[in-house]
Length: 505
Image 1 (spheres, helix red, strand yellow):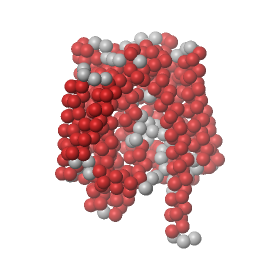
Image 2 (tube, one colour):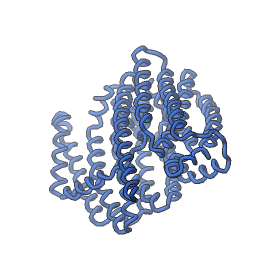
Image 3 (cartoon, helix red, strand yellow):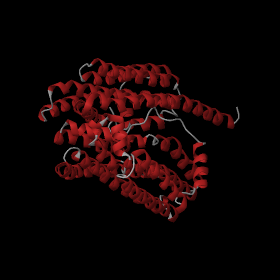
Image 4 (cartoon, helix red, strand yellow):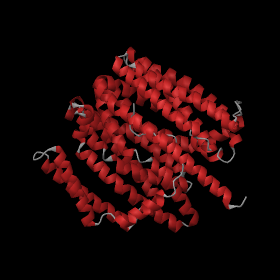
């Protein structure tokens, strides 16, 4: 076998796995999106608020059992599959112990905060599903590292069908609300059983607790664990704070706006699949090429992020009432604010990748910990004031402002650490021109609001925005397309499924 043949074999395997996982990802996205968009309308604000609280609260609590090992698995097991037996049983034992403690803490919280008894079972079912979800992420990482994804792709689709069918049955038959939590838990549990069978078949795991191996894996994963844990908590914390301070209807309105806003993050996995490997290859060749690729990648991402955020905000009332009905009209105000966050989020993701690539994972973790401090402070500052000022939906406005404020702090610090790699004069000029075009479009929208129908107004907004972008030459269209074409020609296998920043039922 020649030296080129192993590389060609790896490339073909990566391509086949990308096609298999990508196909299953599209189908599971479609099922999940349909259920998440339909559920608020059929449950109504009161019931949906309870479900959204249970989901967000348990997701926040159970983030601690992840331990950050999935990245370690993909890095180490991909080159030494037998190493999985050195730590996975020990990691699973730690997770079970932590889960027992978490369930006890969750019950204490439910009692101390006077949550209705009928919601207790729903919350614990969502907690169980969070445990199985974490296990599934790690088992899937083992299969990704081994390159054995045939059964995994089918398992992803089957579990989402079970979840969707179970949720639909609960809504149509009018069963108790805890049935929605049961559908989520059963789908994740069945998926976990399937993943265990596939993992045993392909990696022949030995279920023995190896203390040194477990300790080494947990310690190596610590910076990723701290970063992901802190980031997930401060992105989910707002819902729990709203539930305690403002009631379930405010949680429902804010959750509905978060689901719509989360659609803007659906392309974020492409940054990991495409741009991160592109950064690594460029940096391996030279620092100058890496810096150039980083700057042009940022331009490409902002070309998508700016208009997405702008038109999500301009059409907020229309999107909310179209998807959920008039009962969710107060969600429009928080959606307008949340729409602004995604320009910051995309920049933060690129900056985080740059920090990891340059060996500064602990710096990134420290920034996320700072966000965990800033977020509850901003929620405390804004929620009560906005609720008093705006009435219905005001508490959600306060939470949205806290989220945007937190992301602004985190993104600013990350970008400052990345330094001049992130921006040059060209990219700063591009941002300034795009902001000017967005401001002009917003002014036009305000003038047209009372003068024409919503479809005509949004169509005029789009035409004016596009014209201004082209006239101002805010986007180097040919260069951007050439860069995107070059980047996407180097795709790597995607992960199992994205984890949305917004609360998802």
